[in-house]
Image (cartoon, rainbow, N blue to C red; front, side, top):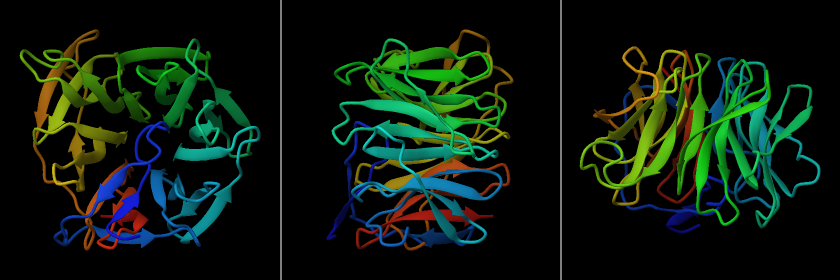
Length: 315
């Protein structure tokens, strides 16, 4: 594939994003990384990982795409059936009960719906009221779902929290690009958002920010090492994982801790985060998509030849 590979790493409207391979990455002593490819696939994405050792993801360059479960202990891939009525089904996350969430869409994204599917294969579509395109990207063990919904021309998104207990949608942080990726069993939520100048803090620049939403709805906007992060998951200890897009085109992962002890309901504040960024051994780019309560991580790596692989890292 030459010096670039195509990886779908954010919302469904960003089907193709090129990751230029410019630098070799230094090796890390720990944790232990294992890399996996779906048999016969051109590229493999690991996007979710539960505490029972089941990862989920899909193969973005196959036609049609193949979604799958992956048993990290038995090293076994199991394909997940496409949702009838849609050309593609992308599985983005899984909870401990085996319920998956994701995006079902037409090839040209003229139709799209968030969904969740229980371990018996029963599918529930989650169209967002009043918006034509919806995407589900996170789920906790209570079945609460987070994601984003888009307007007709994909120019405005809103984050949402869906509670199956009462069928309610709670919307937050509308912006030109709101991405909501993770929710833990406490109801804490993480994602990314595009903010106007001065919205994150006094005289803050316009651009992309990560956010942490506490149980009471308070928002913490944050940057990692001065850069706009893409937070992907949060475990029950408040550990957030995600990635940073560097100016040289490489992507590095991060893991940081949050808590809502000082979050006042209805407020927003800013936090500057500094941490050691993560690049898996021998890889050029590392996208950390999931972190479990045991500290395992999973995600996507890009190697020096342009290959895109799923990974699992254990402490």
